Length: 406
Image 1 (cartoon, rainbow, N blue to C red):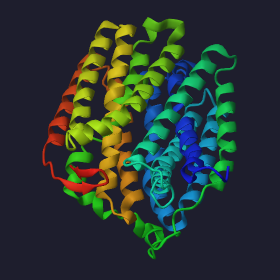
Image 2: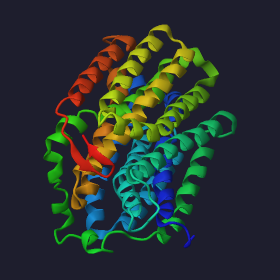
Image 3: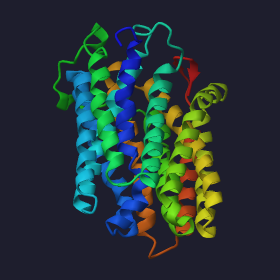
Image 4: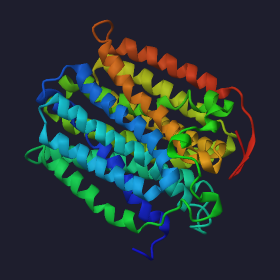
C-alpha cells in the first residue's frame, strides 16, 4: 500500500463513510413497515441523518484544520460503525433508529468536509504530479457518489434476497468500516507538512469562522443552489419509492435499491462531462444543472399522480443528471472561492447546505394531509426554478485552475 499514490489511500475512508450513511436509504420502506412508522416518520430517518451531518460538516472541518485530517477521519469511521451498530440492535425502536442515523450522518459530515478536503489536498501537484486540472473536485465528488450508490446497491440486494434483512447488511457495512481504518492510517497527513498547510495558531472554535462564506459568489450563486443536490436525490430515491410502495408491492425494497443506484450512478457518470460543459459555458453549468432538477421534480409530480414505476425510473435518471451536475460545479466554485485556510470550512458549509435537501421529502410527506404528493412536488419544482434564475445572475469571472471561471 505504501507504493500507492497518496490520494488513493485516503479514498476508502470517504467511500465507506458515504456507504455507511446512504446504504440505509433503500431500506426506508422496509423499516417504515417493520417499525410501524407513518410516512413523515419514515422520511424523517433522512432528516435525523441531516441533524448529525451538519455538525459533522461544520465542527469537524474546524477540528481538522487544527489537529489534522487523519485523526478526524478516523473518528468518522468509528462514528459510522457505531451508528450502524445501534440500528442493528434496535430495528423496531424509533429512538434507536433515529440515534443510529444521527451517528451515521455525523460520519458522512466528517467525510464530506474533512475527507473531501484531504483528497483535494492530496490531489495537488505537491502530492500527485500527475493530477489533472479539476482532479481536486472530481475525485472526492466521484468517490462520495460511488460510495452512496454501491452501498445502497449491496444493502438493497442483501435485504431483498438474503435472510435477516435488518441484520446481514449492517454486519457487512460495519466490517468494511472497521477494515478501512488500515489504509486510512497509512495515508499521509496534509495539515502541517508545508508552511501553507501548517495548523493555524487559533483554537478550533475560532476556526469555525469562515470569512469566504460572506462573499456574494457563495451567498448568491452557490448557497441557493446547494440544497437541490440532495433535494433531487432525496426525492428520487427517498420519496418516490415510498409513494409507489403499493404499485411495486413485494419488490418495493428492490425498486428502492434500483432507484438509489440509478440516481447516484447517473450522477457519478455525468460529473466529468459537467466539468467540461462548465468550461465551455464559462461557468454556467450550475444553472443548467438546476434546470434539469426543475424538469426532474416536475416528472416526479407526474410519477406520483400516475403511480407509474416505469416513469419513476426515467425520473430518477433525470434527477441523477441534475444531482451530479449541481454537485460537482458547486463544489468546484467552493474550491475557487475559498483560500487555503477556509477550504475545509467552506466545503463543510457547502455540503451542509446540500444536505438540507434531504429534509424536502419529510416536508412533502408531512403536507400529505393537506395536499397530495403531486401538488407539493409541483410547488418544489417551482422553487427550484427560482434557484435556477438566481444562479444565472451576477456572473463574475475569476482566474481558476482551468482558466477564467464564474
